[in-house]
Length: 390
Image 1 (tube, one colour):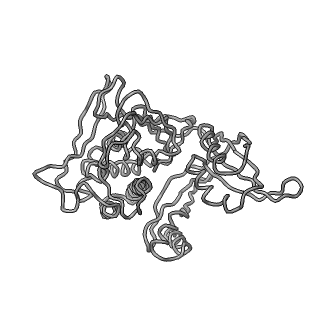
Image 2 (cartoon, helix red, strand yellow):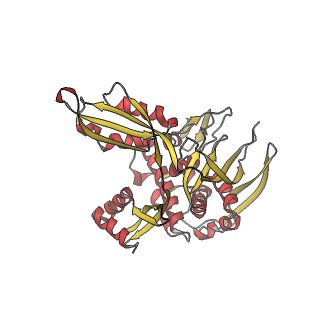
Image 3 (cartoon, rainbow, N blue to C red):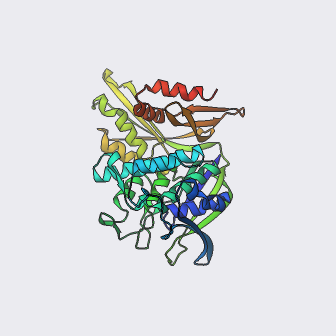
């Protein structure tokens, strides 16, 4: 089970992720070839060794050559559909495509939410530039190559002050970045300036990191350097680890509710709790005193996510109190994979059983998305994905 330990004490960005992951995967030549794999001509990959407060680290940059511009249609401003097409046609692994598309989907949804516009009309500015696209695709490619199955993260330092963007001057974190970081543990840090960028936040969103650090065995560590110099090393440190425990301690949050309509305790509320950091959430029918029908709402989370999950329940239900029960659970080793169907690829979860055998299950949400786009039933997509396993 490959666990990625993320230490964003000086923020995180797409190029920092790409630079550090490339060292973990020993894959600088692979990333240097990435512009060609994406069909982007006239783009140079530049690797440099930089020193940050005595820490020697690598830095990667993707630079467009003025004398050899990119192909028409690859300007700095792109729609989500343009970027999806670019990634879908790229000569990279299916797993890398899935990760890259998922990251850009999160970016698009954040931008659409911030600006109050339909997803298909989102027009990327800074994130649509060639270097940002390559940072994200490089990170996706390397995460797939390393077989990362889960991530652990320290509090994300965002920086403070204001940042100038295409639409104007915004407080840090910028609106889309703030949306992407929702549910994560944040700190402003001591430095002024944007330390966590939209690309870095979107990669974090894709990884769905836990902010509770379990017992881990560190296998390798890498650092990537940023541009600015501070009193502390302006770097991102990543470590590839493996879990040394098969069980983990969690909290079970419970409350009984007898004065809310059932529809208000449905999937929208459960999705909200998952966004707040719950590992799982569910509602069960119960009978309370004097025979009153009611519901029991339960959410499973780590101790570090207790306050934000609790706040989500208290803000969005009629309950006036919560119960906390410590629980332990055993987890099977797992990783995200991609299955092909006749309507497109869907993501799935592959787990390793105690016997050593593996089991792969298509993810319902991914099947639903493909089914809606293709105009077919979810069952057809699910069965097609399962048939591809045979």
